[in-house]
Length: 90
Image 1 (tube, helix red, strand yellow):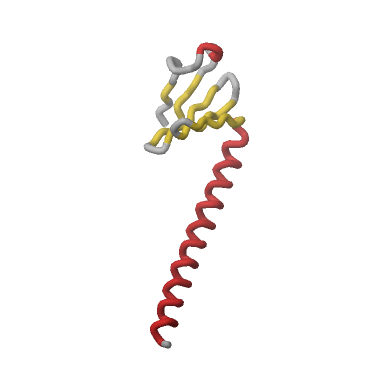
Image 2 (cartoon, helix red, strand yellow; image 1 turned 90 degrees about the horizontal axis):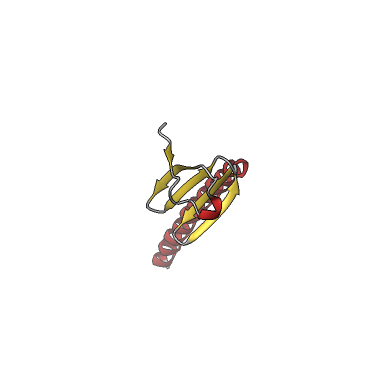
């Protein structure tokens, strides 16, 4: 795994931070500070700093929400389809 070190964009009050880019896509990025043991999730203008141990818990929370949203959308589509069938019968 390639690790990208991001040192130049650390704020001046965090000059001692060793920031490592963990992941980046069109939604944002996650940077880890080795010295602070903190992961920073950056989504546009929003930045969320969480301790490294919480990152795994956040991953589980997001995965659970994603699964439940997909199930909800499937149920909603199924209900809409069933309602349309019932309306066309009457």
